[in-house]
Length: 406
Image 1: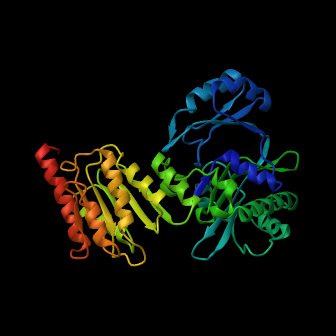
Image 2: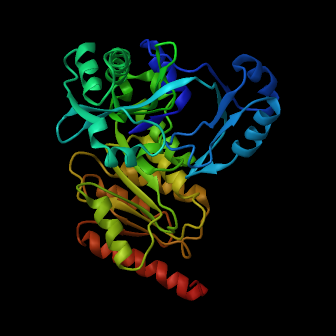
Image 3: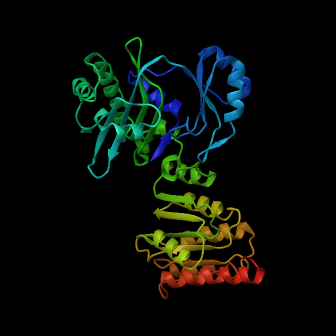
């Protein structure tokens, strides 16, 4: 999944008729006077990061004047909250809330349909509220191929304790949110709280939206907005992760890649579960993978970006690249791109072991190309993947022993 930041989520909801607080995004301190004049006080200042529970993370402040806004900006922007860097502040008008409700839509992969969850007790600690007051929450299966009438949502809201009048307002807001969920092919949409206001309207105060990243080719606007890594990794994506994801959206082929914290071994093995198994095997041998990688017919631009980027990961002590036996593509081009990246890196390959295990069409030429790199070990199907990984780990350990690395 790919997350949207809150300002963009609210823009999408507003397109479908759902009211959102007036807000502006502040990137630089110089923008504070103008933004303060646009929103008016009191206001809510939030870190613009793709997580929930911002208040509990210390990423939300109520501000009553420009001085307090400036203090909030200095306290929030530039800091990291639960693994995400706050590069900007979302400033919104503080709404007059009469009732705080909870509303979410999730796509259930097991049921292969969406499920709406709505609750009379929204706001902070909604999970605890749902556990303690199950009668105040309801789950509704949603058929995304059919229109869901407002009346059915209003009835659901009445079932959790809202009056008929409030249930009608909440039902209308729920239908509008569902339109956005369906239109933008979301996997998750959460509004907490959904405010029932004193004027009889409903406002989306806090929002989260995750988009199905397999649908982004149909959502080019959203592809430019998403915060890749937020949902998949639970942290800010690295520059290399973002680069490879962007390449996925641009052309044929696909690649999944992530950097692993605390690792020092480049592990680029793919195919038929090989990526996960190889990481487990390296860990069992005492190694620490620095990367996870899997790919389906990656193109040359993807591979070049992958190899060049991985070789620049700080603290990397070696690289293993390969797969199960390839049948539907020639391997010499992949090896050529890797060799070119290795040669450009100017690494000392006696101290930086490189092991390839590649078998398939074009192997003879691939071996000749690989021979240009000193100390590189190339294996085909004459050995198992396990053997190649053992050689890789052993060579890294030998280097560490010679150099006195603990």
